[in-house]
Image 1 (tube, rainbow, N blue to C red):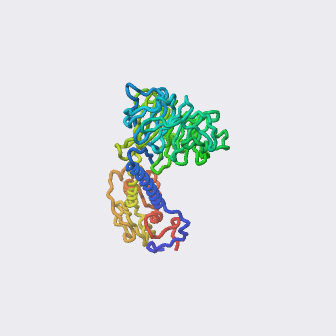
Image 2 (cartoon, one colour):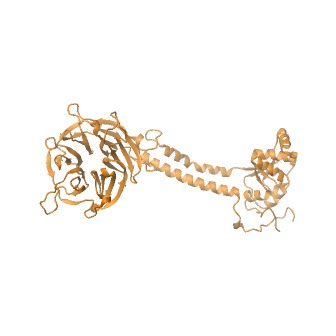
Image 3 (spheres, rainbow, N blue to C red):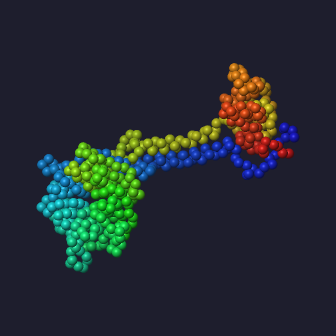
Length: 505
C-alpha cells in the first residue's frame, strides 16, 4: 500500500478506550464544572449572610453559627446591686432578672440601667421568669412558696397566684414549680419537681391542659430527672432534663418527638431560630464548665464561649441564657451579674471575617472557585511536539483527511524540508544548541540527528517517533512519547485511526 493511500480502521470504535489526551480533557471539564458549582453555592451562601440583618446570628454553609462578643455586664445600682441572679426574660423594651437572694425581679433597660423592682413584698426565693405574649404580665416561679405568681409589667403590681387544677374540679394540685414558660397562645408550661417530675401545660387560670410526657406514655426513656428549663415555640416544646443531661422535644398533646443527649448538666437554654422560623441551634448554659455552648439540632457542639473567671466575658456557674434581637443575655449567677453578648457584624459566622461585615474566608475561597472555568483555557493551549524525520511519512498517512487544530510539530535542522506538509499540522525547524546536542549524543550514544530531536523534545516534553532507541532515552528523561498512529488518534480530529500500529487495506 502506498504511503499516500488512506488506510481504513478495522476495529469497532466503541470497543477502543478514549485516548489519554481526550480522557484528561474530559476529566478536566468535569472537575471544572464541579468546582464552579461548589464555588457558586459557597459564594451565594456568604452573600446571603452579608445581606442578612446584622443583629441576627446566622450560620455559614456548614451550618455553624457565629460566636457573639462580650459587650457589657448588668449588675444593678451601687445602692441596690444584684445578689444572686437566677433567670432572665427579655422583651423588646425590658430585661427582667430574678434575684433569688434579694427575693425580687429586677427590671432593666436594654442598656443595663435599672428601671424598678417587682415582687419584693410577695416573692421569697424566685427562680425562673417569663413574659406573656402580649407583654402585659410577668410570671415568676418561687421555690419557697411552691407557686407561680403573676405580676403586671406596667407597674409591677401583683396580679394573682396561679394554681393548677383539672377542669370541672375544685381540687388544687400540690406542686413544686421550677421553670415557667409562656406559650404563644397565652397558656403556660411549668416544670414540676414534686413526687413525679413532669411539665404541666396549663391555661392562664391554672386549668390543666395536659402534661409532658403525655399521660400513659411515661417510661424509663422519658422520665424526667429535674426538668430545669422549658421553651415553647408554636406547637413544639423543649425541656432541659438537667440531671439526665439531655434535651427532649415534644409535639402536640405531649408526645415525645425526639431525645437529644447532651452529656452536660444544663440549667437554662434558648432555641435560636432561622429567619424562616426553623430552629438553627440551641444555646445552653453549662454551669459546670462555666460556658455557654451552642449545639446544633443534631446534637453536635458547634461553638462555645465564656470560660471560668470574674473578668468581662468570663462566667461563674451560669444559670440561664436568652437570645433576643441579636443579643445573648447570660445569667452569670456566681458573679452576681447578667452579661450581654452581641452578635455584631464580625461575629455572625464561625469562619473568620476578612473585615467587619465583609466576606468570610469561606466566601473568598468560593469566589476563587468561581474562577475555575479559566482552567479550560488549558484545553486551548497549543500542543507542541518534536517529531523525528522517519515518523513524518507515517504520521501523514495516519492523519490523512483529518484536522489538527492547535498542534505544532518541530523537526531538527538536519531534517531538511519535511514532506507531506499538506496533510500535517504546521511543522517548523527548531534551532538547537550545538553544545547540548554534542553532550546528549555523547551521554546517550545517539546519532547527531537523534540528539537534535531529543534536544527539542526535552524542551517541549513531547516526542513523536518510530525510533525505539530514541523513544527509550526520551522516556527515561520524562518525555511523553507517541508513535505516529497514537499521536494522530489523540490530536487529529476526524482523521484516520489506527489499530495496534498496523494498517489494513
